Length: 386
Image (cartoon, rainbow, N blue to C red; front, side, top):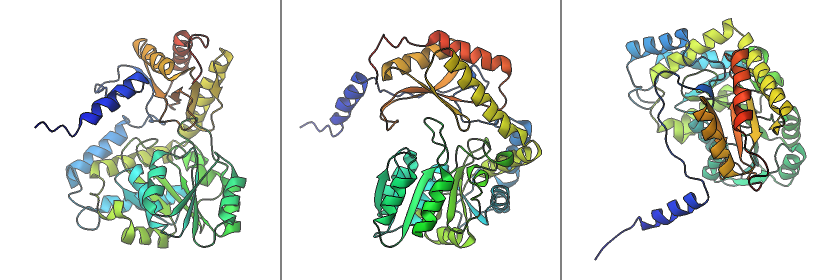
């Protein structure tokens, strides 16, 4: 008697293929082969010699891995230094470093909520926030995108502990959350505000100190931030920043901190190296925003539909999922890597190219990028709108 418990996978694979939603891994080489507008290396620090040297030195001194969870053997003096530097740079009392930004969001959401409490989550939030809400066991109210009034209404209908959570800069379209208005709503409702600043750190605020610093909210009693070290800081890992008592609470209760192996020393060292470069060269943040504005303006002038960027992400609409995939592939053939977002990764169902505006792009590279995107763009009449 045959037993095939995974036959259902074949049916799922067929459905994905029929919908044009098959995803594949494409290993890249060690040396850049394409003009890169796909990665999240906003400040061009991943290959910066100071950053790579700091990562290598940390591995040489502390070893290739953290060797255990942070509460056992996985905390080093390097981790503690990184936490102090992150908190000081971003304007918070304390910080806690985790193995990824995803883990940081899960830690914050599950540790700062519980059964009977309420989480109010923006409809455009990242998948890690969505998963954190699910794991929290709290009641979750998903509200329309960037709508403080909807957040206020949801909070007003609940009695007891409450938390509002939002991306600072939304990863799909690159638009920024209305943080001052959200903070005021939370203050009025005696609710906490949790902001994922993954796409704001290094790009927004004075010298790249982040969206919360730009909004004057960093260090607030009711404000907690999460961030990733893998974007502007060119390394790997994540962190939660907030009042010291919040961080102490996470150390004692956050499962993705307690039961996960600590961040590798090389990643901690690389992030510290990147912070050093950013402190010395604060103009990198403004340059990333300048490149984004330039890309947007040139693409719109060429007749494409793009979303005005608030940080370093530029979203260009495609007429369908299939068209977006072909467009991205044609860009690659022409020598340029771009992001391709389509359902189910996008909650609005609209497919698009996602471009990242790196601070180290030259004017010549910007011109080349725009020319490539325009030359390979699908005609809107060729396919139905997603």
